[in-house]
Image (cartoon, rainbow, N blue to C red; front, side, top):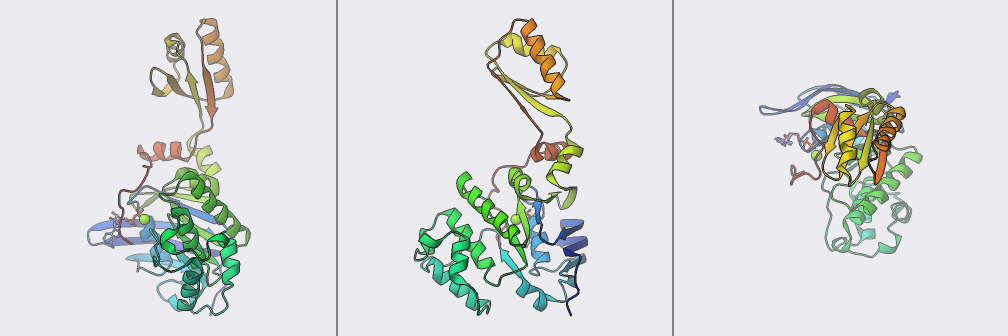
Length: 316
Ligand SMILES: Nc1ncnc2c1ncn2[C@@H]1O[C@H](COP(=O)(O)OP(=O)(O)O)[C@@H](O)[C@H]1O
Ligand SMILES: [Mg+2]
């Protein structure tokens, strides 16, 4: 019988080895019902392996994973009807239309009562209903993939890198779709290597690097506890302005002939820098002060950057 779970997902000391390779190393975390949870990390960090164990596709080497309070290794048949999955690098049949594709998957998963038209409307593909899969743009294909993941009206949705390779506008549309699903009460488990995606969407972010979670919390809390400074960028054609900032002793994180980027503790420091530049009669073109972001947190914790696009990645 289904036990009422406090959390949608509970992961305890999850480890996965592929031969000698330790792909997932002792992960523990919970996902609350109704939240967007993002597993954020670079290519090869262990995101897909983790998702595929939670959504019952792979077996763990050790550890315990509960979904809806049930052990994923023992209750696959009870769990699968209640979840939806968009695998990494999803693709479908080239010559089948949008509507036929959703109908096909609805039948495949024996969901007799899928509201096909409602789903098409939800993912905003109404004017593409009769378009063949092969003619859809990357963003439309991903939205169709999300529609397929929703044919059984799941409580928990797993989206593995849903926006990788999309242009900024298509990415934004997928983001809006995810927020809409959260509003409908769905729990969304997302993996991504885009820090701005995790920062914008997620209630909880777990940063994963080399199979280990290195930090976890709300994006705001992660930034607050790991990166307390502000990032000030000054642009000038006057080398004297840069000399003045360097001499003031602020830590420079980027420095070239056009601009200088320094970490400052508070807004008072910005004022101090501006005053000193003015007193030194140096000129400035522009200045920008921003709060640190998750990329800064990742850089601080690992000394590495979250790189842009996965190079090919692991076949899924
Ligand atoms: N089926 C597999 N067999 C062997 N090694 C694998 C397999 N799947 C993934 N790996 C390896 O496990 C590590 C984690 O991969 P993966 O979970 O796909 O990470 P991510 O999704 O974060 O890119 C990588 O080093 C990858 O090459
Ligand atoms: Mg992956």
